[in-house]
Image (cartoon, rainbow, N blue to C red; front, side):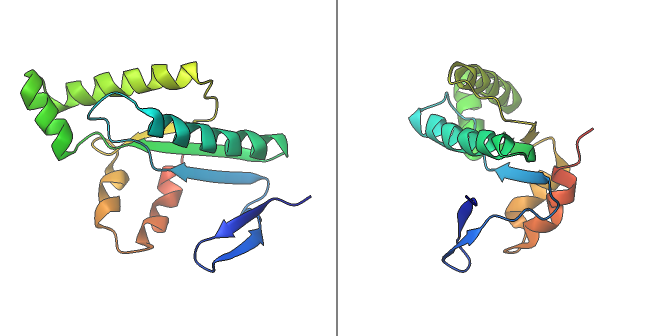
Amino acid sequence: MALRVHNTLSGTLEEFVPLDPPKVGMYVCGVTVYDRSHIGHARALVVFDVIYRYLRFIGYDVTFVRNFTDVDDKIIQRAHEAGLSATQVSESNIAAFDEDMKVLGERGITKKWLALTDPCQARLPTAAAGEWWSFMPEIFHLD
């Protein structure tokens, strides 16, 4: 039985065909770390972790990348209120998020990506529609 996915561009169900079999790359937008995790974060994690596990189960070599938005007005505000730097607030909340996700049994993340410290991530919000795909080779280059 083939894996079928909904193509939001065409609005149709299509058979999943990787660009470079057996490799598959997954990029999932992560959380903005201005506060601790909530149920919405857990839901997103579980959904994409299940997809990752299924792709691995059916034989794909999966690279799974999730970003954290670690610079944002809400983060700056929380930092100001707490007398901390924005980096301290972000790092603390990322560590708490990682612990929360371990409790849920997350196994799939291959690479985490920070908006503040990863240069191509910082270009994503200003990229024209669809242009961010040009950054995919940078995203999936793992040291």
